Image 1 (spheres, rainbow, N blue to C red):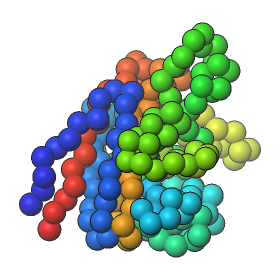
Image 2: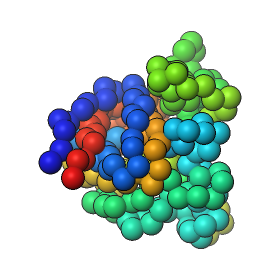
Image 3: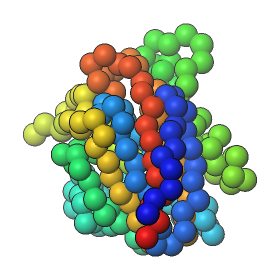
Length: 201
């Protein structure tokens, strides 16, 4: 049994309270949309899913189905129950912010995942001082043998999804990445909505 599908519009975000053992299904509705994703301990906002700590535990830059995702206290916070995509999710690149868009030549304000994170947590009454590096779902960043990276289009397809199980009571934040300058959201650089469900056993 599941609840209804909930849509997160293009360029927007959502913070969701997830209880221990609950599962969230995040759906790449159009197949080409990157979703910056964070997870925080509900009872200690200073503990959060950390990509640098996760890479040290798993010895990989790609999180895989069946693995756990770890916090800055090196404790599991989410379990990857299922992943229908090729599994190319980025753990290297920081969330986009106003400074990133300025570097790319943008004049004026551009929506960004960092602001989305702060605003979404604020709506739930949570305050953080800095933006942790996100798990960039479906973001395809190939790394060559010399360590060079490429900002490429996702390898995922329409309606690919990932299911994450909460190991503790946590907050999952999803930002529909508004990057429309480099082709991480597809060669057409169109930002699309995504959907999610809280799965109920």
